Each structure stands twice: as structure tokens, then as C-alpha cells.
Length: 60
Image 1: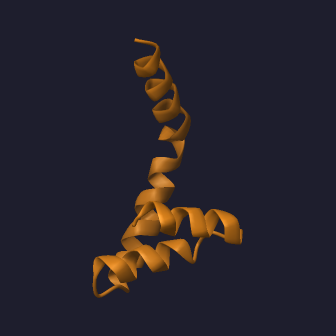
Image 2 (image 1 turned 135 degrees about the vertical axis):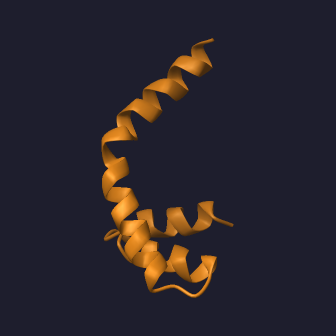
């Protein structure tokens, strides 16, 4: 039960970012030939190297 509350809180905290995420994904998808290229183009949008690396590591 507590886990569900935690998950719902996390989802609620990122929900305002979804419109921006859709735009970034759509733009990157238009310039990508495959999923791997799409993920790398999205990673390029992350300024800080540790966060960019964490994003790419999470995809593996």
C-alpha cells in the first residue's frame, strides 16, 4: 500500500513535464533512424553529464 502511494506521488510530480517530454521526443524521433539513435538524441538534451549517463545507463 505504501509503495502504491509512493509511485502515485512520483507520477504526479512528473506529470507537468509530460507535454514538454512529448515535444522533445517528437522532435528527436523525426531526426532518428532507430530507437538507439532516438535515445541518444534525447540524452543530448540533458546538460549535466552524470544525469545524461544515468539516463543512458537506465536504457541498457
